[in-house]
Length: 179
Image (cartoon, rainbow, N blue to C red; front, top):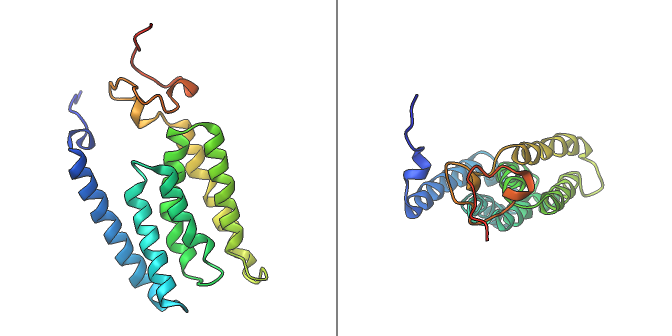
């Protein structure tokens, strides 16, 4: 049996931020090259790509802000068709983190907002209504998986000091001192 601490637990916060920033930069460059550089509005495409990449960096520390940042490109899809495709990955990651770390009400509100963004992929005039089904079916999955998985703050022998949903799901693995 291997009892080593996972790599993420051994990294310092600055190192984690550097890795997340590098991943977000790589995602932003790939999204720009593959999808958004051909958009109708180049400035809007650049802004949407930067917001989607920025959401990846924010997700670990501020999942709700990351969700908002990742939702904006999805909502702008009626103006530029390519923005919805790049917004899905950061939005799903943020939904996963929100479902795992926040209350059920926050998770359901985020999921409802994400589904509204999925409906925005068909706008204006619902001439691309076929895009709603894949986007709408993809977004609930990270929320369900995040709700069923134990919170990363409550495992690996932590003290559950944040209490960000541990008591709601009973997934805390350590005993807390009683007053």
